[in-house]
Length: 122
Length: 374
Image 1 (tube, rainbow over the protein chains, first blue to last red):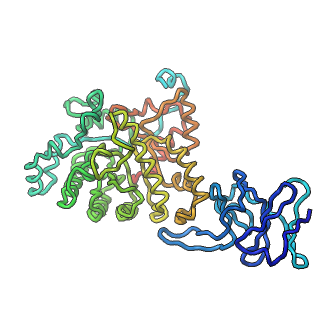
Image 2 (spheres, rainbow over the protein chains, first blue to last red; image 1 turned 60 degrees about the vertical axis):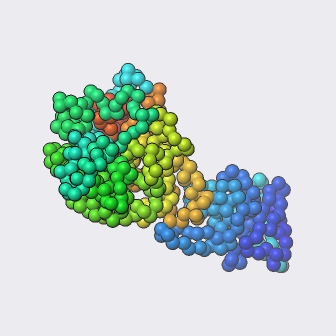
Image 3 (cartoon, one colour; image 1 turned 90 degrees about the horizontal axis):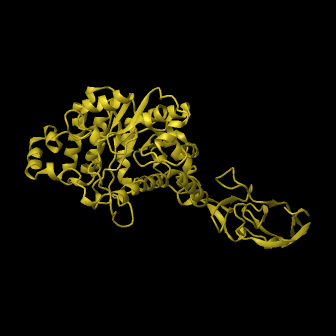
């Protein structure tokens, strides 16, 4: 199934553009390097609408008393339990054995973005 | 769990070597005995204000043991003093009589004095803490190489505490630093100089109640409101360890002092399981608030913390206890008797149902990793 997500210039970083594919809601965004990401709007932990969470960066591990910040626009934090997911890989950020985000392939054609969604439920 | 049921289970072999991580000596003769380790000016001060009567943790009547005595009345020994006051009897009764190869002496009265019962500005706590340590170093430890000691530090004065750690740390029979707490959580930077010194000397930090928690301002306030009786207070004490583990993890102490170990004595350990699960769960989501906590809290606790076994809980089926110990991580568990207190777990009657290899780890291998044993 090829789902039209709209004009390419409307798909921006730090914001999810929502589309539906059957019963599935999918959020589409861009990373800061311009790469597209399409993610199932369902947190793999307990099923929350993860696209309503915080889409931004994070504070990576640091020495005691120090603080650094990065990965702007690449981390989505669930609104329910705040688990952090890496939009680059879909994996949970600091819990490698946990389930990750469901990501879908995308393509940009003639100025529009499309999400490629399997016909079977996934 | 009654004795009959435990006896009917397959009994494991006695551990090849028993290390008892919590034994309670008492200074025979009390404060007056300590005066020979106190400069004269201080000795006269303590005598003038009758410190022998007021200087040891006096517990209000509501918290008196319902049977009249925390130390066992059957452990008094031939001289008849308070149980734990005669080193020769303690050695014969606990070590020789039970096959204990190493016993860690932990004098909780010193902790009460250091934390709250004596003054800090006038250095009473510094003077008395050193007196306690010197007393045990000179009058107990030389009696038997199997005796080891958790030296108490004057927590109200961190500079003095550091100096005392460096002094006692040269004694090979000093195996831990007993840290009485102020009403400041263990992760707070107040304690960091003490942690640095202990880490430098290879000594673990040893936490045990002093008996005056929640009774006096300046000591840790453990629960909501004042305890009502001995049982109420007894059952609340593990909360101090639970709070301390939590705060140590979240403050980054384990990252700041990467070699430092912590021993939590006489708090039990079953409460640890849900805490580990919950800490990991919240860390997964809100780790960025404490980015210096660089790995799941349960991993850190299992690597750097130890918990003595007494008082062992007694479910109807002791095999449930084994399962829970495995879930927690048996590597953190260290045998302790709490001799000569009323609820001690004597080694021959404790955890007999465990598989031999597991029992050996708890009675010997884990304590050997936890303590500094020369």
